[in-house]
Structures are given as structure tokens and as C-alpha cells.
Length: 151
Image (cartoon, rainbow, N blue to C red; front, side, top):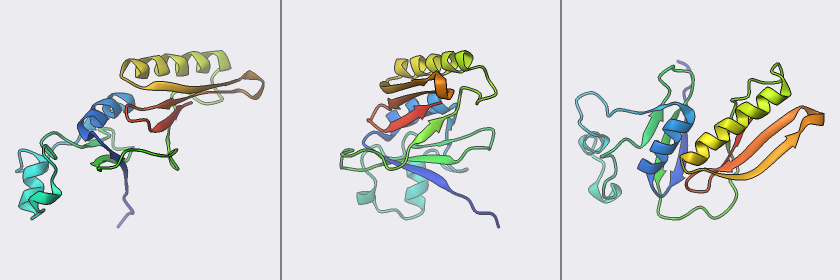
């Protein structure tokens, strides 16, 4: 049997994170398992205690999947504490096409994607524009302040 895995992101507002990251990654909210109207009803059927299900938990999908099947499942887990330090792990959105694409074209593609994500609520943290090294990346924060890069 193959090794499977998912990414889990602790957050305050899972539904808002699902909405943002679905658009950022071109993923879709994961539907509830067959036979269940919502994830909450699924979790209840498994015996998850009500005191472990915050109000609204599971009524709207809290996870994302890649319809193409190439990317991992991402679950946005609601936690009570807020983010307090820099991420130890972050996502790189590889949209520029790599070093086989002309630098100016990569710069424009990455910039366009950053502008699209700003329109969804992200903010720019830093721009790394190093044409002498053939490197262009934009470091960003998602809607809850988690760092990610666009390359």
C-alpha cells in the first residue's frame, strides 16, 4: 500500500481559508463522504463528541482536494490560539514556469498571480527581484498571516 499524506493548516476560520486557498491553488472544497450531507454529520456518525465540534464545524467543507489528483489533500483545522510566530513550513506556488522560461516572462507571470491573490485577500511581504541570479519570487501572507511564496 502506498504512503499517503495531507497538509494540515491550523487556523481560526477554516471556511474562509478554504475559500481563499481553493482559488489560490485551483483546488475544490472536499465534499462530505457519500451518504452524509455534511462533514459534521459524518463526524457525528463516527462518534466524535459534540464538545469536540465547534459551532459550525463541518457544516461547510474544511478541506480541499486537487481534482487532477496530483496534489495533497489540505485540511484547515480550527484551533483556539492565533498564529504567533513565523511558519516553519510554507507553500511555494510554482507558477512562473521555471528557469526554462525567459526571466522577464516569469517575473510578469509571478507578479500577475500575486496581484490576483491580493484581490482575494493576501498581502505582499517581500519581493525578491534578482535578475543577475535569474530569480524572481514574491513572498506573501494569506488571509490569516501564514507565509507562502510565488515563484
